[in-house]
Length: 85
Image (cartoon, rainbow, N blue to C red; front, side, top):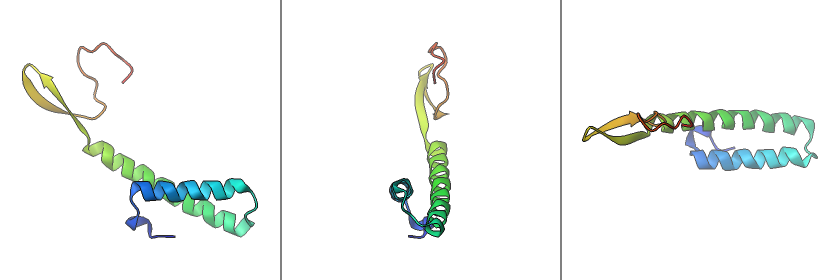
């Protein structure tokens, strides 16, 4: 397997999907299945970590009282009346 630190999100997801397909096929020897499962768990953690990093970087620019202000991604806009965010 490629070193996890070298994988980008898309590469990690692609490898994880391949592992899932291989495990779902059902004819993998037990030792290999355990190894694939461990690799999949590491890739899953890597993807989660990368998503958290991206989420922290995303900011929405909103207009308040004629001024532009940055708000963290996912912050509820005041006065929008929509609780579904």
